[in-house]
Every structure is written in C-alpha cells, then in structure tokens.
Length: 311
Image (cartoon, rainbow, N blue to C red; front, side, top):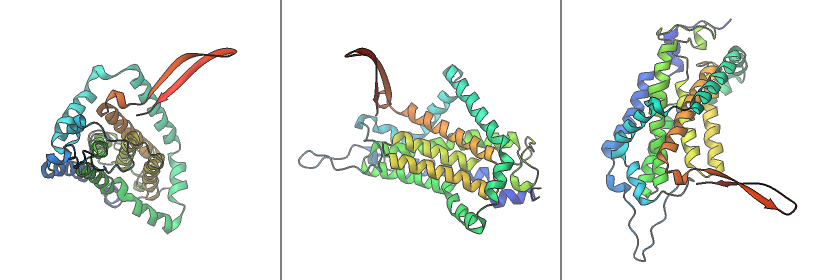
C-alpha cells in the first residue's frame, strides 16, 4: 500500500508549480532580450596583425560563420520563437517518419508504465537518507539550475564571439520553453495523474483534477537541454556528461517520490525530441551530419563504401 498524502501538500513538497517554472523560463528570455547589448553578437574585432582573438567554446563545435550570428542575438529570440512555433504546428510538416517516431515513443512509455510500481518500490525505498540527500542536491538541475546554465551559456557565447556557444544557450532555453511550457504543462492538466505520494497508485487518472504527475516537467527540461548540448557539441565527454545529468534528474524525481517511471520517460522523450528538432532547424544543412553510400570495387570483389561526414 502506498502512503496516502494530500495531493496539494505533495505538489508543494515534491514539485515546483507549473506556472512558476514557465515564469522562470519566460523571465530568462526577457532578461536576455532586454538586457543584452546587440553589439556583443557582432564579429570580434581583429588585432593589429589581422588575427581574430581566441573564442571561448565550452567544448562545443567550432563557431558558425559571422553571417549567421544575427540569429543568436537576444533581440532575435522572440522572432525565432514565433517562427519555430509556426513550423512546429504546421500540419504539412508531418511525415510518415513522424508517425513512426510517435508510435515508438508511445510504446516506450507504455512499457515504462507497466513497470511503474516495481520501479517506484525499487528506487524510492533504497538508499535511505543518503540517497534522498543526493536527490535534493541534484534537483536544481531540472528547475532553475538548468535554465541558469543555458542563460549563462548564451551570455558567454555572445561575450566571447562564439556563435555556436551562444546558439547552444538560446536553443536550450527555447527548447525548454516549448517542450516544458507549451507541451508538458498542458499535458499535465489534461492527464490529471496522481503522484506516487497521493497514495492512489499508478493507474489513477482524472483529467483536469489538478494532479500533475504526467509527464515530468523537470525531466522534460533536463532532457531538452541535454539533447541541445549534445547536438551542438563535438566533445564526447560533454555529451556523456549532459546525458548523465539528465538521467540523474529522472532518478531524483523517482527517489523523492514525485513521479512514476513513465512520467519521467514521457517527459524525457518530449524534451529530447523538441531539443533535437530545434537544433536541426537552426543549423545550416551544410553543418549537419551526412552519410554517403557508394559502390566500391576492390581486388577480388566489390562492395559498398560508407562515408560519415560530421559537422
């Protein structure tokens, strides 16, 4: 029998209210738009010998050409957000592969749902006070910490002239705003799923009841940021690091009894999908990874030559 706790008290103790999370994200965008100097995004001045100063890259891919840097300026963020939302909501954009991806995602969530109670018992009842203490320390990564990190990345990129670093921060903030604020949060209210601490079990769904367990907003944020950083980065350690931190956020939501496994999986899939889509949309086609398959003739036979071209 799961412990019975009032739903309202559970929300206050285990999760940041959805409106507060959205306000944080919007405030981060507004701060960038209102407070940054557009000149920061201009190409850095060259020194006397014509050489440009070194750029700070945060382990990300090389900076994009100067002509594309206008898109990472804070003043351009609202326009880009509107354009991206229009594209995301355009029915003709959907392809057969999108339906396949959606079906695969739903199947994954379904498998996770079948393990909800088992995972709840396994994660939330093990580790004792030490695990709970670690989870509370990790939790900011899925709330204000992730937003602050992307805001700082955007600012560092602008100040140092690294367009790709600035784009990472901008894309990260926009991915969280769309994935968490415009997709996950409405789904929470529609689903009306009870949190583990409500004592209703994993199958209690009451639309528009104010119970906001499904999907996990903090997992959405963490995986959106991880997918953006991964897509922008050529650093394997950085890629491994951001995905590890995202997984840690999912673990802490379960350790603190705030979400079921399927809540975390659904939130993570939404965040990762939106983050990856945004980066691909904002990245020139010439910088995307491509695979070329060509026939090849070798002594004694033949075959195929596969060439992988990275950014």
